[in-house]
Length: 331
Ligand code: GLU
Image 1 (cartoon, rainbow, N blue to C red):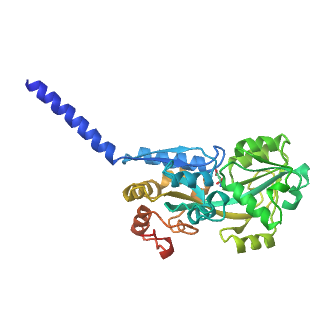
Image 2 (image 1 turned 45 degrees about the horizontal axis):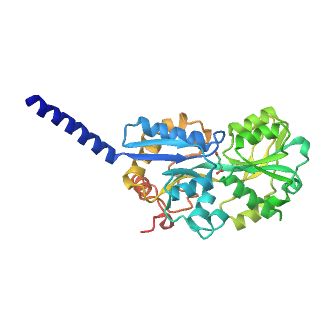
């Protein structure tokens, strides 16, 4: 009799204990991009840090088409976090700029932190005679993955040259990794990839194919900036990739987004774990050199294009980072 009561008690304690644990635990899937890009290792690395920290969050990363997909999936609750270009997050939240978001603003999209700059990199085969975007008319060009931020950038860039994707002989879509192979094999003439500098996919392309970076003129970038303020000029230095010269290009920011539906405490814990308590691992263990080079808490709100999540507000305030009124979540 006594042992039966004891057994019941033990089982009850276990069940109750587990139920308590389960109710406090937040599961976060982070949407990233192609496995050959930098969003993917960034999301995988952050998830690992969170899982090893012994906090009540279980995180994992998912390879996706990129920014447009991630913002939509976060809005719909299919992902809890995502990496996104800051221009795409702005269009998503405001329901403008990008066809996929037109009149369908993702009002529950919230900012977590700006991570690092990305550059719209334009690569062309040396034998394709492409010195400017104009020269792409009638050519086979990779324009990004389905759901990528890259494709939106291509559309915007072509607009500045009074051309559209329809001027290409064949716009090619799919994963950026497969595009590198197509470029190497001469099945496409050029490719666009909005990704952090030093991405291994581009390094690999530079090592295996006769390719060069195509510049965009500073005048065109100025015109683009007037229309799309998130775009600014960057000079890609010579030697960024093996055997490739310098180029003038357009840059923007990669940021982390989430949904207003996630608990304040979960986002706060996530940020405190990744950006504060395990900052060394964030800088050194994640396979994205841009984090160590560019990420600081002081710059994590520069280029923040949508209102912050409440948990992010708590985190930045605690870290003494000034938050602009326009970055505060709507009440
Ligand atoms: N910026 C790209 C996009 O949104 C993804 C870059 C990456 O995967 O690192 O499509």
